[in-house]
Image (cartoon, rainbow, N blue to C red; front, side, top):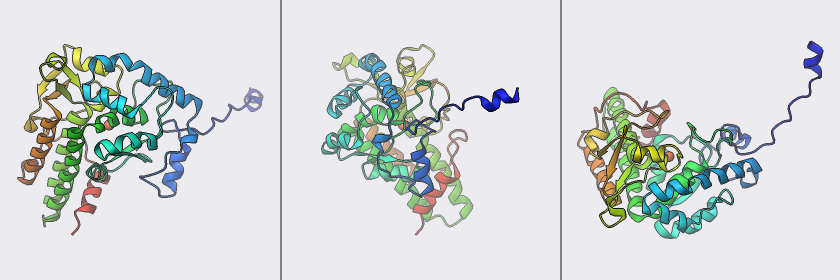
Amino acid sequence: MWRDVALAPKPAARPPDLTTTRAPFIEEARAHGEIYIIDQPYELYSDDNQATWRRLLERMHDPWARYANRRFLEGMDKLQLSAARIPHLDEVNRFLQPLTGFRARAVSGYVPSYVFFDCLRRREFPTTVTIRDGERLEYLPEPDIFHDVAGHVPMHTDQAFAAALVRFGTCAAAAAQRAAAIRDQHERLHRLTSNIRAMSRFFWFSVEFGLMRHAPGDSDGALKVYGSGLLSSFGEIANAIDAPGVERRPFEIGEVVNQPFEIDHYQPRLYIVDSFDHLFALVSELERWMLEGKLDDVAMGEPTVSESDLASFLLFSEP
Ligand SMILES: [Fe+2]
């Protein structure tokens, strides 16, 4: 028996590519301390990676036509994203930047919370360049280029939506400055953790999983999807609009910042805004709530605020 094992041919080594969690390039970037902004190593996309992009994009064609909000569909056209190949971020930015000043910046992986929001303030969107395994199109705990570029970036062509993203960045900066003024260390950590949890929940239920009621005359007031987590999910986009078991509620700040969420199943509760101007006004209101101390004791529960998220805010709150 041992001879069989010893003589069995070794499985062929997989050539390096940019499959999520298996990309040596990303590990090397980390090893060399290039933790955040990197170049998109386009030549490393394999034929399998390209085929995965094609399948992901093609199968969303009909769900997007039916469920996506109009601004997203216009954004897809403006950016000229196609199923033919994984987009070069440089090309995407050539179309995007003149519209709203936003650009997609390739990153090597997880970006701590403050750094992420601060990028938004500068109209930069941290963008994952790896792509999910073609064997597992459905569920992916990590972001990938399909979620980030096909789910998020088309929304960045809209002026009001882009302004709302920038406002998240100024809100985070205000939270860091406010924390710096709190002398008691325990109190500072308590309030900051609560502020970060509130911002994460607000972001989740709007930018990632938001619904919007189109104005009468524009799809006859139909409910549409603008959240990128929904826009990049083949199964959940229809569930969000059609499933009778999903609760769809008006977006109230006091409710949203106290609403825990879990990331490993379809969302049972979603929140509706009226427009992207409405979303911008809500983020501005969120900042006012934070400055008034109304986000200092939000409900415990998910998401967990990680050490690195907290540290990223503390680093920028130093005098
Ligand atoms: Fe996302």
